[in-house]
Image 1 (tube, rainbow, N blue to C red):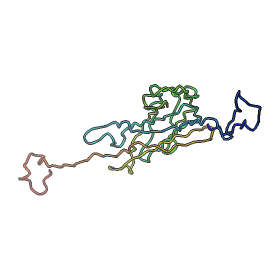
Image 2: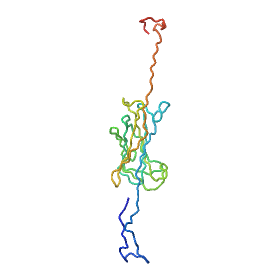
Image 3: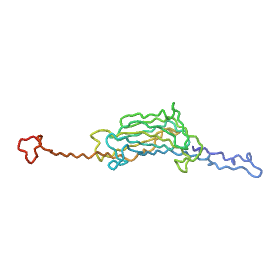
Image 4: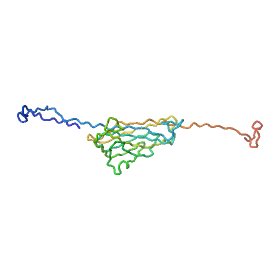
Amino acid sequence: LNQSVPRFNHSLFDGQFKTEDKERDYAGSAHAPLIVVPDPVIEKELIRTDVTDSANGATDATIGEIITYEVRLILPEALINNAVMIDTLDAGLEFVDIIGVSVGAGSNISTNLIGGFGAVTGVVTGQTVKFVLGDLSVPGDNRPNPLVPDQGNDVLIIQYRAMVRDLPMNSAGDDLGNSAKFTYSNASGGQSLNPASAQDVKVVEADLELIKTVNGLPDGTALLDADAGDPV
């Protein structure tokens, strides 16, 4: 908030605003203190994939494998209205479900949604998933937050799952990406943060090997003794 309304220069009112020994002079450009509320910050992380082994690493996924994402909203101590998080998944991924919305340790965040953060769901439209968080209230308690060193800001955590789709377009070696953004309203109107992305997931597929052998003739005759036309 920047209250830039000039204060009166009392020296213009000669003799009316005096102390014992001199007039009280104020600069005509004197302003009220400048109070700056920082913007929220959005972070996104790939938490885990369902299968991790020597052939399927922590950032690899096979067809049908479940991927867990986490979005962290670092919020200033303020009122943040019409808060919405929107995630856009690559065409090779599809939204499965929301694990939950939680308030980080040491944080103090509330919503006006009926049912609180437990009422948040993911609304799917094409490849986008919309999480309506409501009007958020973050009290000005100035308490340091263990998740955000040296800051008094609080953290809201959203976890949800996606799956690698069984589509011809998903082939071994393909990278599947994502992009999450946070929108909200304040006294200046609608705001939108730059999107945040988690690490891409690389599609892996099993290497199949076909081995064919002939065991012999049905009557037990060795292959070396077989004649033309004998079934094998």
